[in-house]
Length: 108
Image 1 (spheres, helix red, strand yellow):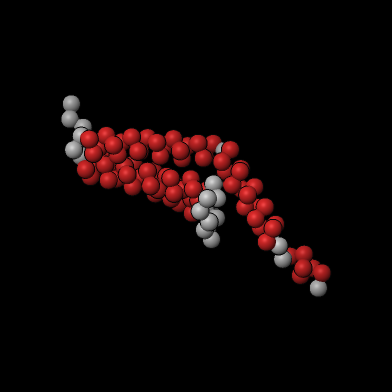
Image 2 (cartoon, one colour):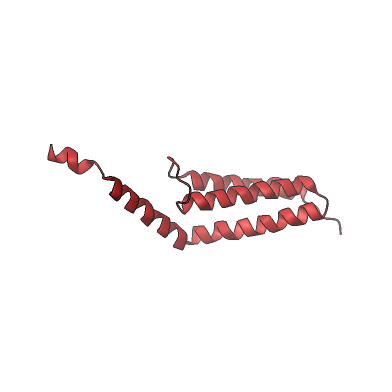
């Protein structure tokens, strides 16, 4: 019976573990990369809309949303069941970089 009780984590232990993971994520380089890419894609979204290339602007805006959502999940601001969802969203944002480059061809 004692073994079963030891296996069950209390709510406080789970909260503590999630808080530690969030702090580790925030202080890590992956967090900084995500924020940097979010800022760059926001700039390109603004640039695309300003240049009249709305397709590129929408793709870059989608990238910005994916990167910000990835950071919020990784930082523990948004809770999900999946532990790796923020990595999947990051990869989706990076894949959209290829789509963005196809549409974004500013005139000289």
